[in-house]
Image 1 (cartoon, rainbow, N blue to C red):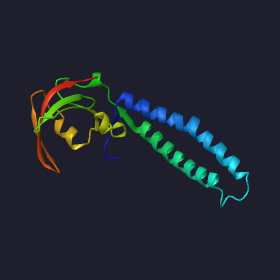
Image 2: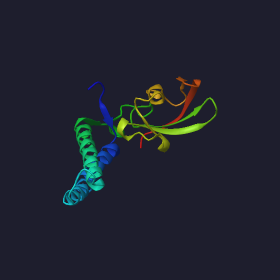
Image 3: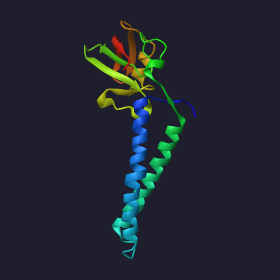
Image 4: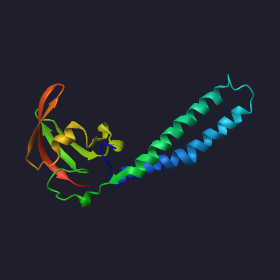
Length: 158
């Protein structure tokens, strides 16, 4: 393992819920379809059987992945952060860029990142640039479009 698997408590709950759904609901339903399709005779041209077996492999692969991630996860709670006046994992940061666009993001684990919802991975360039900043700090980031400056406006730990 080259880097720790940091995750918020909410992110860990989401992984557990996905695992629970796959293992207790989706997998048994898929097994039932495969069993039914297998009883229909020739499996080589049976779409339900072929797709069902493929889906079972996908589910099992995802279940193994989720179990390993959950087992290795390091839960980071907001209240455990040493200094709430600085940006650390789990922080919600409001910043303004050089184009005067104000954005609010939350720094989360890789498994819970959703950029459209403002959740960015702690290993992303923006998060890494903002780490340990305080309100008023200006960070210069190199992007594919050139350099961009981000000024930290607010830091909050939900």
